[in-house]
Image (cartoon, rainbow, N blue to C red; front, side, top):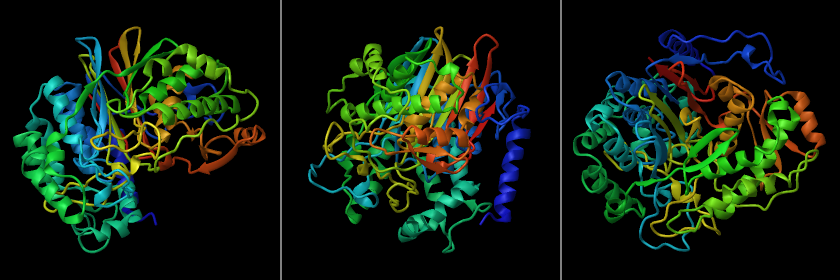
Length: 562
């Protein structure tokens, strides 16, 4: 039931976005359907413009944390780390200190990009043959969030850990107003939440799930954040918090030990690189799926998408077929590069992409491509993008895997632990091994145009991350959409092992019928469906020195700039 408190919260959020950000709304003169004059299409959330810096995240309070750091003279990395820590507090269902992620950073002064891998890791004890559950202590992998954010700040930031963590500490200590989105997530998982006393204490302090408009406080998390701010990453991996996590795991039958935590390291990697119609693509490398986004775009480069309307049968069909082939290779080849030889050069070859494109039939849905083995699907995870006036950009995606992760909290810490161990496959490069990092579909991405930074993009949404990223980039590059239009445009998804194509209900009825005649079966979702995640992005015009940001109404997305 959509209560009065829900309505009040939504109204206040809209007021905050429109008045607080000084944004303007494009006039609406037509239905977005098959229309190609996109300058006339309105957006649900106003697009935001700014000259000095910008933050886009899945929650306005997280975006505010990043903006505060930018205004205090911090760079895009400082802002990204502040936003990520704050978002760990205000989107506890989707990410946190007990989780992991990956970020791609563009360093303007060095004209180079780096990726920081803070994916979670299997414990070091060999448990080959173990059946990994989707929740509970055995589903927990060694968390990477604290190590990754601290590495990024130490190597490429300018602010202290105390400065960038201050907003997150305040939010955890003083509390924040729960949105309808978070309230629904609590209600949906209340059975599992209520079985874990430390989690229920936070989310259902009086025995009933907190509702939209009520305040969520996590004083134990505030204490944990303060300890990290004062003592750095070692507090989490070798100190007091490591003791608490290891002790809790031992008591509950989990596998993570102090030795596992002490062994964990974030890894700096080279991004995977490709190009699409004159834009350079820098995305997150294996064991995550930026490579698959680029491969799918390389396939699509062999077709003239510009002549097709964004939601036409032809456009949807070609993107769907490119995705099927990208997903097939993802299942076959992508894994932890320390354990599997990933043929990166071959998968990113334009010649290879052309050969795959030539296999795509133009008038019918293709046969099932060689099937992979999808891991459990969750619309969780979160993304944030930051940009500063020096030309630096960050794309950062982090997660605790499923919503509410393993549904377990080490007593006294306020830290929700991930359930990443469910993401192993039974065969191929993503099979379990001690100390290995599991594959995931996250793909934070930065685009360059003529050697200048152009966009920072990313989204949550499990396997829909790959399809959404491809759709976002084709919307921007082929169809000339603004960043907000590209994010709000109706989404669709299929993969090599899917019989259906999943689509939002705003896809034109004509397109649905035409797809059916091509042999597709369809699964129609809601108008702005959480199934498809919640993208955030920033586009920069280097000549005018203006940033424009887009946030996703499928979540509580918000863009702030100054």
